[in-house]
Image (tube, rainbow, N blue to C red):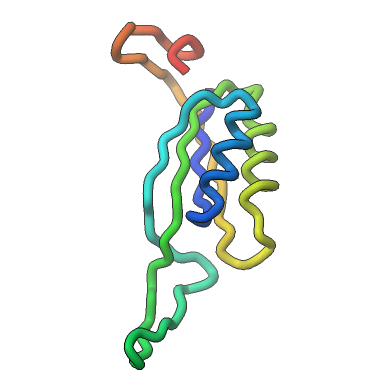
Amino acid sequence: MKMISAIIKPFKLDDVREALSDLGIEGMTVVDVKGFGRQRGHTELYRGAEYQVDFIPKIKLEIATRSENVERVIEVITSVASTGKIGDGKIFVYDLEQIVRIRTGELDDEAI
């Protein structure tokens, strides 16, 4: 079992969610986050004054899945979330030791 954590641009969320749903992914957690990578923020103009925006709004997706689904999930997120421009995001994959569904007590693959 794996946990896939993907940081994407906010306007790509609906497209990624639909593509993952078509792939058979039944659930995910979505969190609004802020951060920066190589783009190091940007300058904006507000009421005639320039100011530096250090943290860029992003969306973090967390998806628990079976190990055999990982490559397909990564391919879908990469292809759908890509704009070809800096700041498209990153994908991290972690091992999951155990999953427990609180309501039923189901474990691991049954709990996904």
